[in-house]
Image 1 (cartoon, rainbow, N blue to C red):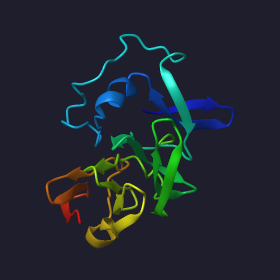
Image 2: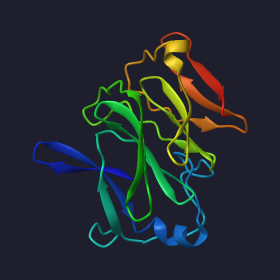
Image 3: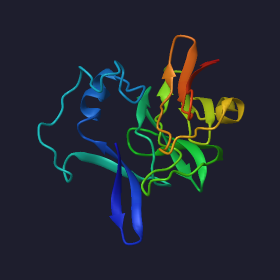
Image 4: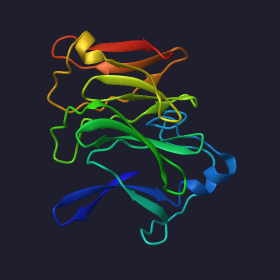
Length: 198
């Protein structure tokens, strides 16, 4: 969960890992590989979850994030991945289940978000368990391995036309057996882009 905590000068994004999440995952190692989960329905069948929420007792750890408007996290192979702006750059971050940052990979200049709490890093990553796929408002579409090394990177907006809608980009990559798919929104005809995953 990506949340914001008040601070005197503004907001600090915080990655909070809830007690509700790791209890079941620690024993059966279930992944949450994309925005809507393993079955694309926002839920998972395994695990035990608290009936009531208490911010004092249900939070295992918190980690301050480097910028506002991060994506929702995904989990692959017991690692938490999310996209976030880092010094006005698009980036992917990885954390272990104890809250330790494992790595951070910068992918290029951020195209900033319009909303005061948003950024160009709103879309959530997607994973096939071997790679992480990310898309940003800047047009950067990339594949990274689980260690944060870039497998490939392209700018689809430079190739196929800039996103021209007023709203910020929030389209998370969708994986098929062979391709990664992103929606590219334009005034007039929009397109769905399929790009080979390898």
